[in-house]
Amino acid sequence: MSNSQPTDATTIPKTAARPERIRLGMVGGGRDAFIGAVHRMASRLDDHYELVAGAFSSTAQKSYASAADLGVDESRTYTSFMDMAEQEAARDDGIEALSIVTPNHLHFPVAKAFLEHGIHVICDKPLTSSLADAKALVAVAEQSSAHFILTHNYTGYPMIRQARSMVQQGLLGDIRVIQVEYPQDWLATKLEDSGQKQADWRTDPARSGMGGCIGDIGTHAFNLAAFVSLLELESLCADIQTYVEGRQLDDNAHVMLRYAGGARGMLWSSQVAAGCENALRLRVFGHKGGIEWSQEDPNYLWFTPLGQPKQLLTRGGSGANDAANAGTRIPGGHPEGYLEGFANLYTDAAHAIIGARRGESPPATSLLPTVHDGLKGVAFVSAVVNSSLEGGVWKTLDL
Image (tube, rainbow, N blue to C red; front, side):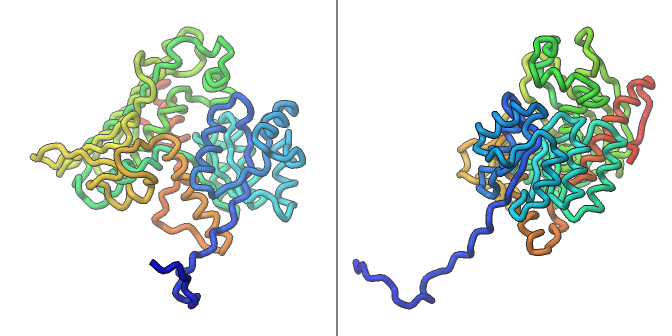
């Protein structure tokens, strides 16, 4: 075999230069925070981002200590998100995108500050802690030159994207029934009294908002059902409970759903369901067939054409379609899940941000959750709580 190299440069395939990494900032997510670490891992997985600045805590000592842990320069570490927005926007090398990983009550003021400075925002769900703030943030986002992305991370799972595409293709026919549930058990006792940080703020209406369980995980179930079924909710009827004595917010919810076009659904979310960890499950049935997916076994999607045997479709397998394969990194049989689903949203966001550098708008087919999806989620929480308070009356979403 010859070791000689080609002399004609035209015979060597040319690789397009990789776009410069997106300069990323973060508000929240300091030491002892859960979701901040998840966002950082997701942003790094496909190597599109570099974390260069942050206001990681409202406490100066903790913010600087967290920055040191993460390798963020002290000169770009802040204790005020307002200072961060102003100073980063003024820098030639300032951040292009911000990740918001704070408790819910801070989502609105932080997102508003950075959007108004033209900085793209990637925000953890729910959109805000109140419906008024959600509507106000929609107006801010619509007036900003920057993108707003909400991290409903389950929409990034490959087999969920396959399920959505199967509905689009008409493989299920007209949708009739939607069943979605998200039970956990981690708040089956009054964990918030132990000093556990996540339990403390998630059960506090001042920081979480008017919904407890329904706002924390019920919004995921609601969003997932809408994402896959492509249906708009017309009205709902809810019965919510607070089983743990002394807790200020709900820890269990049952909701009946009426969708446009005649489909009906049921949603159950609970954080007091003994033996359940993160048992998000979706079933969608049409007049031609049905699908079933479980978050705890996310690489599989069951599809049953009416009158035929069940078919097991697998991520990376022979039954996976283009929608699923676009979000797959490794061969079938090697599990992918939570972090990879999150990373798919961060990578989709990166493509939108890199496109914005060139003056491009996101494609109409973008799967990224938007500020409008976020508004629907907050309106859903408001309708659920008010329906239950009024004795289980039917409510529409106040959009």
